[in-house]
Length: 414
Ligand code: NAD
Image 1 (cartoon, rainbow, N blue to C red):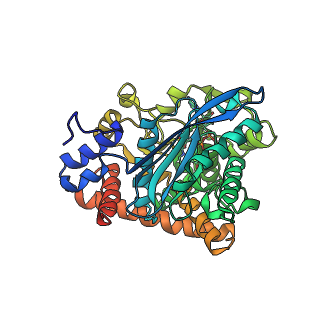
Image 2 (tube, protein in one colour):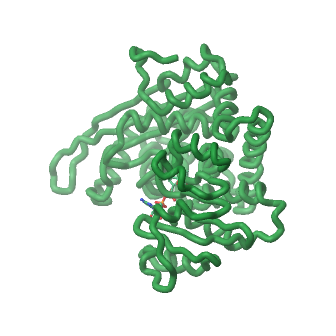
Image 3 (spheres, rainbow, N blue to C red):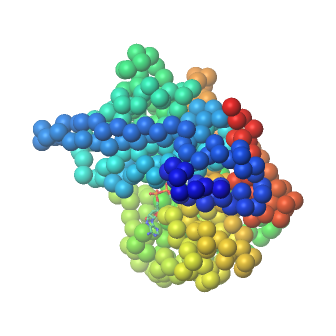
């Protein structure tokens, strides 16, 4: 479908689209709109550092597709940020927003810095500089940013303030992921894990004794730590969890509440390796445990061609983005391991982001119960749509999810 001369910026988008094309699931002609991002913004703006020196900051904002509404997607601060990565993430956001039936297109932003190398004052200058560069193409009805890797509610607050100054008005709906006092939503911090939790609860509702279900979670951060705790609290048996340094394991089940409190109770987040009385397990071995549900919740590409044969779980719920490589997926599907794809499993975050935007526009503040109920309704609607298409057409869930998302975007072709 694509030739070398096509200026395709995002190789991963290309391979996903080719898969859909090869299975004749989507009209090739219509797919042309996904060949390139709709809009690419790139800036090199100066800041004055604390030592008085000038530094040029490289920044991007990409709107991959806007058929369904304003752009929506986070801004990451990372030293490896580049245009290809930002475009790929914006493509994924287009699909994720569409699958969740949010009236938003997909966008993403990035700033090529290692935030650890900058003081707070410098980070504020960079955040404000980003908005100054791109404000013409950002806004509640144009493109709505949010946090991503290394960007925080505080950074969202600086960006919002800069936008308000430039436009001489108050626009909390300009950006999401803000602190509650700046107009943030209840439940946003736990929303990614909550979304996956509702899906797992639905899928395993027939199992009366949840203790029978064994779970391993890779990553004990916002997404992984929260899902482990939620599942533990209603009786599932979580036998292993890990962070970047080590994992801990107990075949009879870990006391996740105790572990969670140990890691998060004090201001300094603790490492799992500091826990004395539990057996240690490497991240590699954790992935290979014989469990019912494996939840990768840390990094991309942790299950690859190299270790796919050794994976023994019955099901994978992708809380991280892209934890299973395409070649690994083929092997896992051969082994009858089902995969709830990232597009669906971790959509809770963006769903509640959009709730924040909606609350800001209506000048409302919803209770946590209200937010969670709406999240549950929205994510289970997407879950049932994917499930029924996958069953009806005998498709892997990822392909079914992609087809639904792409069809919805194409319906709005203009
Ligand atoms: P986080 O920084 O809060 O936590 C990441 C966790 O992964 C930490 O426990 C860290 O120690 C661990 N980790 C880092 N490197 C590791 C390694 N090499 N092996 C094992 N563990 C490692 O991040 P998060 O917000 O929980 O995000 C985790 C994943 O979920 C990412 O892939 C992210 O893109 C995805 N995700 C998060 C959200 C969200 O709202 N937080 C939304 C969508 C997707």
